[in-house]
Structure formats: structure tokens, C-alpha cells
Length: 469
Image 1 (cartoon, rainbow, N blue to C red):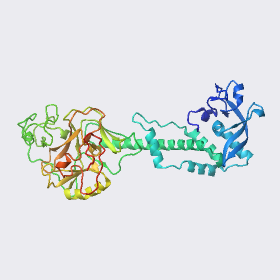
Image 2 (image 1 turned 30 degrees about the vertical axis):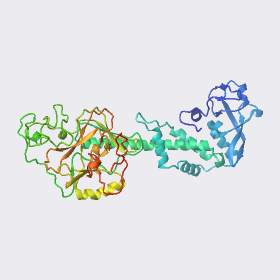
Image 3 (image 1 turned 90 degrees about the horizontal axis):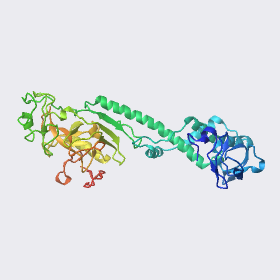
Image 4 (image 1 turned 180 degrees about the vertical axis):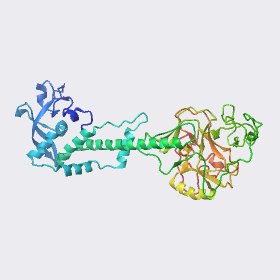
């Protein structure tokens, strides 16, 4: 095994206790250039730590050095022993000196070290990703510590060995150390990138609750083609009206006689705790800027933003990024709003074909007023908020409701995501991308299905429909 940080081999050129021919384990004081040996002299000594005086010769098999004949400091020549390289890793400098002096193979330091370092550091991104999967944990990274100064010294020593003396186990361990150092470097850069992204999100977000970002699965950083927004982005040529033509005259908290409330299901959409109390699919009309009631009106929920701290996190089931709540959510509680770029249905059809080929879906049809001839669709592929990262489930814990506030155009409602059950802290948030049973509708929901490409669903719920769209 190659010495690693914290081992006596790297720090003092000494080795751990070993077993002699008698099978007895002996311990000794650490000394410079000391090694673990397989010699019978172990049985005649109070410890198993010996100092190498010099290497006399070596053996080769199939073009590779297999053993070294070692003369021990303070011991007669007839006690010299043949030792494999794993027993001499604590004194590699002596091995190097042997080849450079006895065989006259003095190396060119700079060119030799450079070439060897380039070769030993030749590994793929997949190699680093596998290592990340091995060491990254939600409870904290488990990346082994490597002393870079000692690693560099060790690497230089190995580079000075002739090729036939470079033991494959030693090379494997050295390369693993190099990969670990590269993993630490990439992980440091990634964490800084994610912290910057988290700060940027919370500076842009108008919600009072915080958004955290976490990736304990791989080395993926923020998506560079995504821009965080708080409300609908108007596509070119589209104007979303934000000046409501009418508001209620309620002087205090609105109730069932409120004009806005009556536009919906026929009664208040929310109870006195601000929780949804109308059937799924019911339209919701909240009070707007023309209403005389205050911001604490019980009919102003979605417009006051998200109140739940959430975490955008990388999933470990192949579903990419996801969102989990960091607080317990009550049934019927408003969680977040689905926002994106509002585009025409024609443009949505064009983009949808490309999204289907890529196996992703961010299109949400605004078909609550007319499910056949709806003119607009929300595209959250490039612009959106945390809802961009909420994954699909055939058994979701969030339902989508159409909500009208400032814009009363029946074809441009806002999309509110409300809990359909109690959601415990640290549960992943999900909603059904199709919004209703697939056999009852050919509408897109949050997808476009105009091609023959079918995307497998990964929700793993008991009633999974197998295909996402």
C-alpha cells in the first residue's frame, strides 16, 4: 500500500508492527529509514523496526523488479534479507539512491518529474465522478486528507525510480492520491460556485423564506442556462395586464360576501389559517391592488409569496436536481408559484418538440379557461424560480391551482402549488406534470407530447404510469 497522509511511513520513514516467522507481533521505536521486514532476525530482537544500511542488489522477473537484497544497519551481512517493495516504502529514497549510484541511472530531475506527473495524473472525468460518488455524503464529505507537501515528495521519489522498479500497487495508490487531490480541488470550486448561486437566488427572490442549495451526490454546479425570476416573464410581443379593472370594497378582512371571493368556487378559497379549503381544480381569485382590504387580508396568500424554507438539492436517483422542504408543511398550505416565460401555444409546440427529444419538460399550458383553444403556455426551461427544479410524481404532494390576482385575463392565471397532504420536513416536493389522468386528456400539462419519443417516469410511486409523457 502506498503511504498516505498521517502514516508513519510518510512522516518518519518508519513502518507499522509486523509479524515475523514465529507469528509474533513486535513493536519498536520509530527511526529514520526503518522498515517492516520478513527476516528471522525479528525473533532475536525486542522490536520489529530496523534501519536500512544499504541495498545490495535486486531481482527481476518479466522485466519488473520483485525484491531487494537489504543490508541492515548494525546487523552482520549474513542477516541481510530479500524484501519486496511494500516492505521498503518507508525508505524509498534509499531505493532511489541504489539505482542512481549502483546502476548509474541519474535522472534529469525536472523533465523526469514533469513527465511522470503528467502520466500519473492522466485520468478521466468519469474516474473523478466515481470517486465523488464514493466520498460525498449529505452528513459531510468523507474525502481522505492528503498532505500535499508529502505527496509531492513521494511522487518525486517514485518518478526517479526506473520503470522496471515502479511497483504497480505503489503506482495505483499514488494515482489514487492524485485523484483525491483533484477531487478536493474540484469540490472546493464547486462548493464556492453553489454558495454564489445560493446567494444570488436569495438576493433576487422576493419571498421571505430562504432557498438553500446542496449537492452531496456529484460535482455538478449551478445550471448556467437558467435565470432566476419571481414572476412571469413576458415573451416578445406579449403584454400581461397588471392593472386590475375592479377590486372589492371590503374595509377589513374579506369573507364569503367579498366580490373577489365570489368569483371563485363560491366561498373563501382559504380558511382562517390561510390554508386551502376548495376542491382541486377550483379557480381562485385573490384580492388585488384595487381592493380596499389590507395586506393581511385572508384572501391574499399566493401574492404574499413563499413562507417555507426549501433546499434545491441534487437527487441520487437520476432525476437531476430536486427541491425538498426544510419545514413541516400543513395540508392546503401554499408552497410556491410556478413561474417562467409566457409564450404563445404555437411557440410552445415548436419548443416542445426539442424538449421531447432531450427528454425534459418545462412547458405548462394555461388551459384552465379553455382546454382546447388556449392561447398561452408557461415555459420554465430558461427562466423560473424553485419550481423549475421540482420533480414529477404520479403520487405528488403538491397540486396546481389557477390563481388570478392583478391580471384578470382568464387565459393568464398564475399557477399556485399547494400541499395536498401534510409534508414533513426534508421531504422532496413533487407535483404531477400532467395534472390529471393521462387517459382523460391529451393536453400537455407540463409537457409536449407531439413526437414518438416517450420518457420513462422515475417517481417509483405505487401507481406510477411508467411513462412521464
